[in-house]
Image (cartoon, rainbow, N blue to C red; front, side, top):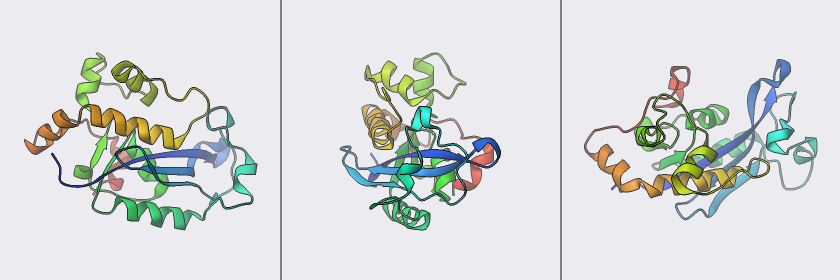
Length: 192
């Protein structure tokens, strides 16, 4: 087993750019191994929002105007970087979260449940990136994302899924038998 601490991560994005196709951080959640929230923040947009992606996020402009949130992007980025320092980060499609956060992280210190080959083999879809709700339902018989996306719920679900297979996963890592597929090459700069 790894002697490092673990944190779970999930982000929710809104769209910027023409047609809202470029993802921009809107909310970020970090949880501990028990699922307790360590950090959860709505983040001020750094560009004009073209699409709040309301159908999946449930977000609209009201989330980004007043009150204790949203926090400035740089503050969220720095806070998350502090939580990551020296830890193993667990999540689903972590490359997308690292991209919108603008943060790199050592590849060896990531546990991405979307890339874990035994999960894909169990579901007989070896070359497919499966959604987190699909993985959690088929491997844990638990439903998530019944309504809008919730980054804290997703971070907890990824952590729970990882922990359900932690012994096998970490045994493979200790034996230098990396048990995961590689993330898309376009995101390589987010892994050190």
